[in-house]
Structures are given as structure tokens and as C-alpha cells.
Image 1 (spheres, rainbow, N blue to C red):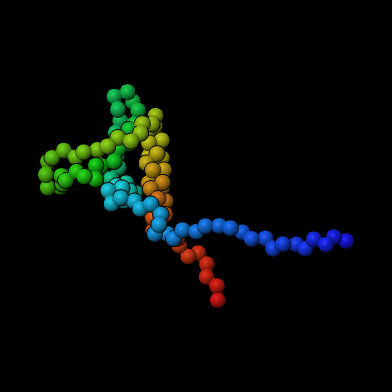
Image 2 (image 1 turned 90 degrees about the vertical axis):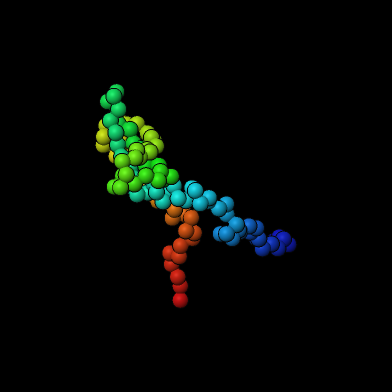
Length: 113
């Protein structure tokens, strides 16, 4: 028989409060909220036959319903098919929706009584 007594195991870990996480700038938050709305996207066909996805510049002040000013669009990616371009837009929207959900913080998924 051994005279050794088992020692209790101790787990060391560090936690941080949610508010100590790096904060997203207001500009980034404005952009993400803008990008997740599909109405702010478009697909254009380029002279070489490819399709380019673009989102409307969130800092553009023009109102096409009242003005005839040019809208500013920011190109994002190019695809060979229109279906591929729309799929890329949907993937971008999904990506930024997840980022926005993360910013809202931890969500309760189960409680106990």
C-alpha cells in the first residue's frame, strides 16, 4: 500500500467581464447595420461579362427619390455568374449579422429552477 494521499485538483482560469472586450467603433457599427440590409446591395455586369457586387456608401447623403445626384457604390467582389454574385451578397449579410449578434453580448440559452 502507498502512503501517498491524493491531492485535490485545482483549475485556474481567468474570466473577463463582457464590457472589458474591445468595443466596436460607431462607424463600424453603422457600416455593419447598413450592410446587413439587402436593399443596400446591387449587382452590376462588367464589360468583361463578370458580375460585381456593390453596396451603397452609407455616408452618401443623396436621396435618389428627391435628387438626381449620383449614388456612391463600393465594389466588394466579382463573380462569374449572377447566382454566384447573389450568393456572395447573402454570405456577406450572414457574416455581418453574426458580428452584430456578437456585439449584443452573451444571450441566455437556458435557465434552471
